Image (cartoon, rainbow over all chains, first blue to last red; front, side, top):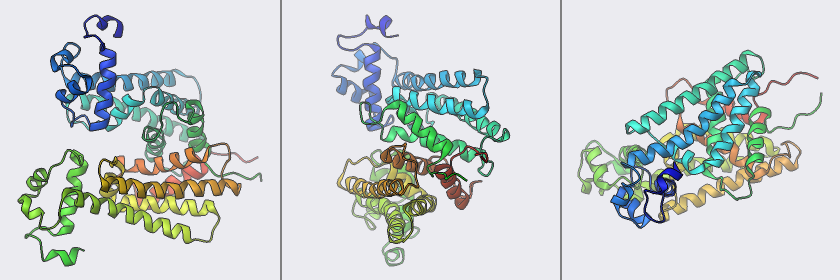
Length: 201
Length: 201
């Protein structure tokens, strides 16, 4: 997308860098609270220069949330194609999701704030629900295998698990002290093995 | 507050029910995106009728986030006064926080969205940080006791733990299938003991 659209843009912005800044503004002010005027002001270009790249604010939102959802879909497909016990596939899904979240932080942040007020948002919520269903199915399967404790409702388990994963957007900052791979390890350790030290016997 | 302010209100609203509806609107539209006109329209009263109860939108926000923070402070004080190992105090704090979150759901939801754009918001963030520091200190102390695994950074542990707790606002609905006490149990089970079933030996 970037290369093919570069020729159409004004100097300084291609479709990619415009999307990147738009997402930054959406995350700061809220999508509903951001007008195309606000974007134009931040970019230092005219509204019509923005319309060189995108047909509407909705299209910017669609491109942004698709970037998050496409990343999660890759992990979901990888997970589903694995021939491993459900608990190992679940761990793969958690670990991959942390990686997507870290790699595509502003896009995932925006996705998690979408509330379904427009067709683009409803479609994004629909795709998120499909992902959530995969998580819930894996939890149920792992419970059926006897690999996950049966004393927690699978729906609550799936939600708490990804509640923990998604909460990372609130505090993770690229280049900060938390290394992405260690972070994914920490999430899996807390979720699958718990914080409490177990004593032998 | 409710009883003493009831005499000052218009028929149909006292300070309490006005706050309750205002928080509902703030959570729907965002605090910044809500004007006093929006509130007046939703309440079906004039702006000046709102000013009978509160001096400003900021005051509504302050009362709302204080309701969440005061609840958390009670749990924090209880926790700090307990003479128990740090891990037991941490569990008490997690369990109590889930209860406050469930009991004061709209107020906690609003608190978690506050971003520090005004003195009221900055004060709320300051109080949240004090609470977070208590969590981090307990994690560190429990790790020092050898009760919590040392292979996860205490700061990340504290954040993941309360990331999971706070994520409950995204899906918990009063009167729904999730019972608050069972929910607190589930959070503690996942966080402290992990999902994986351990086999003897």
